[in-house]
Length: 115
Length: 112
Image: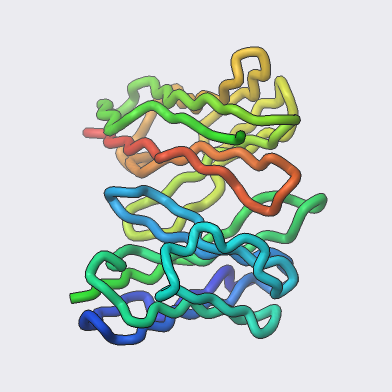
């Protein structure tokens, strides 16, 4: 299995630009998670989906952030407009689902730099 | 509510030293407990887990025992290597939602 795939691995953009991060979860996994990691705040859960439906988006910082999961094999996290304080590493993770196993499998992350 | 507290880092050890990273938790019910490791430039990966009280998880020489009486899940390794240098995250899964609750992470530096 290829594992969780994220693209791009690195993104450098200017303040005010739109940024789209992409994730392909492991096939057959029912849950998908978006995390953000910074030195100051550590690892933060932004949003997660179950069977393509958003379950908890309470970690999304503000309206500039949005996430979608149009099908079981693809999700996007969009920031519009981006700001320098959005600079972080963004991780996507997937898990098979409750009652089966609760282990999450992380992608390699996207390092976002907003100038 | 549910929460995880880890000892602050960084933890700096010499090669072959004994490692303990403390983790305590607060949870309702009977959570599963995890240790994840993050090597430089990579995503988190599962190191070990335990799903019920007194279970011991182990992997790559690391061990942790689920202690319900002390609400702890301390990570130990008898002899660390330079390649163990990484950030270690303790986490719990409450079982009634889909999400993990992570601690703040502890950085381990092992010097030759």
